Length: 410
Image (cartoon, rainbow, N blue to C red; front, side, top):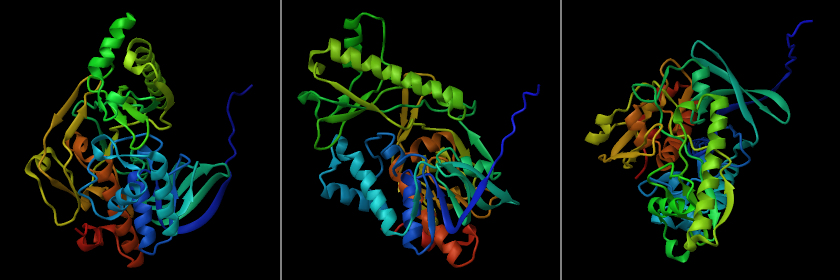
């Protein structure tokens, strides 16, 4: 008897779009909104049931490199502020549910078609041009044709499938540690402004007497504005397994194990945390680093240290180099001079109608450790959306988009 498995694959052909955005995180949401506002017919594909990615499904807070941004990032800060949903820790935290709401409102008002609970399943590409995208959801598998596609997956899945060159990790292939954020309630009044939890947690572990230690030496309790909730950035798992499904799964399991350890130690062995409640772990794993495409420009450490400015700079980045050391409890930081992210770093070499936005753009391991934060990702996405719309409407390559279209208005 044969053990061969026969798979029958039926693919539905869906509508055609000017711009298809894969991934609805900070970069993808901004890309879709910008392209829609520019008059393009846009499809936004998101695997979760909301927009925002790490902002929302990932329970990420705070939102770094936001205050020096114009455009959509500035709009979001103003919208959240108006609802008392912005502030908190370092005055750059936010209420995740309002972030979901505002992103949806902006996308729908821009005419964007949203597809939630939809997995990217592949591309149809030939000679460096992507003809369309395959997705899978409750309807089965569907193919959508797009004139320009934007890869906002974080892991550069689409660009890699289309044939883009890419690298991963440092010179030895090591990637930054991953984090599973989690949400707690019942925060002690003395910690309402947030704090680094390391010494408090180590003391609780010592009282517990099980020989455990914090998995990260800079764990933060990050209060959500106008609430008694806080997110916790603490768990640390191997970052090199981000593209290995089984190992990534076990990293998530390990993240939840670390979360339970932390919660039980604090609640049971620190009087200040006796009323602490554990609410939820994030639906999305915090991956700091995986693929980085090779683009028309490769951002380097020297660009960060010299504060390089570019004629096609889509935004200014100010966040320091922040490396969560692979397979370690350590964190390394390095100051930078304000520098720009060039549009060319979002253009994968060899691909004609593909843009990437977010942490997977073209740059070094060290440079990415600065520009990866979400305020920058949002600005990159907005520039990608504007560029994609211009390219479609003027029947030109994404490489022929004038600088005036992508540079920010200050």
